[in-house]
Image 1 (spheres, rainbow, N blue to C red):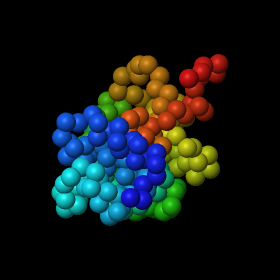
Image 2 (image 1 turned 120 degrees about the vertical axis):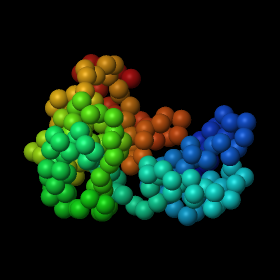
Image 3 (image 1 turned 90 degrees about the vertical axis):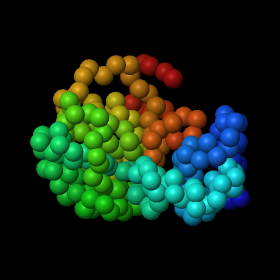
Image 4 (image 1 turned 180 degrees about the horizontal axis):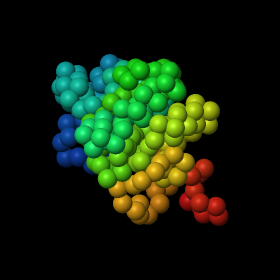
Length: 211
């Protein structure tokens, strides 16, 4: 198998949580994405071997859920909600600003940034809202969207943290955010600690605060 020792150990830990190995297909797909940046054919074959199902069964799961990316989407995936609440609050203008600043149309990516439409992300009260590597920003304006893209290209953060981005680029929120979240996403996939897709963003910590 071509996975790193770290990923193989993580896979063993995940498999140990399930009485049926096939139940671990979805978590292991995130391990595969963490390993390669997206779901490769080799990664899906390894998930199949580890769980005792066929590669076709793994691919059918991966193709059903849109968070499993089977093509490269860059280091930072910007997902702009264009559902009704965000649309009515100007999401199309924000999306166009993202496309213009990134130089990438929705549905495409370069090595750094991918841009896509997203269906409702559950932040209607903070519309227009978007995700960067599945970390939320609410109340985004076209000007702030351009600043966001420029920041991603210049700062190149290793960890994407929702609280940090909201403070830098966000506006109106659905409700007052609660406990500060120090962990964030390390790639274009949701941040889950046990799957190796989350880490602490030390730049986002409050002054004098430690992990």
